[in-house]
Figure (cartoon, rainbow, N blue to C red):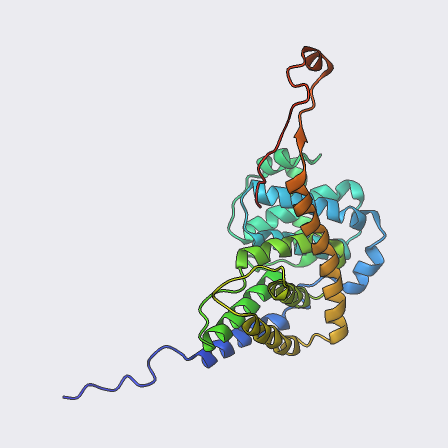
Length: 307
């Protein structure tokens, strides 16, 4: 007997895969406003004490993210919860640190990372108790209407969608190399979201501007080079991101504003990274130690610890 034909039972073609990723992107876009901080409330709260200290609290949370080895998704989720909470409730500056680590604790739980509350309070050096942390966590959940296990849609999701779509487009053109490095994009996204100027910007616009900025670095004469792809190919993918911009319904003015904000933030970050490599570290000792003069005129070059 002749075996039945397997026609139509193989792997889906590249067009079908891209359509599936675009469908998932559109589904995330429908939830964007639900999980985004109120832009008008952000502008009104920018001058208040809590929002002024928001960036300082965000940097402390990034340290805790590194200490507890949480993924970037959990950290961005934590910032999303904190920003939405600050726009819904006027938080005094004295209670901001407690609210920040409460959002951190909730975000860790949403991403299935168990953190001991007592350890979190001790390591963060926040002047609150475990009961204060638990009580503040309940307030955050009630104010934001969090349900069990529901993760907010953040800029990380849009970065993932854009990278997958661009990788499929690259495969259609017979390029197997991954131009966009996910780890590098998420690290730079963390840096961008530390700045409160990005709170009022749509997460999809932040993610797309970040992807375009990373591709723009590849197009620069002094940018990183690779034998696996050409400049013309990167230009083709960059033009494809304009199609993604239309899908996300981001206006040109919104995109220009987002690019300008990201450029100023990332320039400071890149300049600080270069300056850190040239710094010379010196030991600072007590007066009694200096009287012994074991380290007089002593200096050394320390290796750079990569993020």
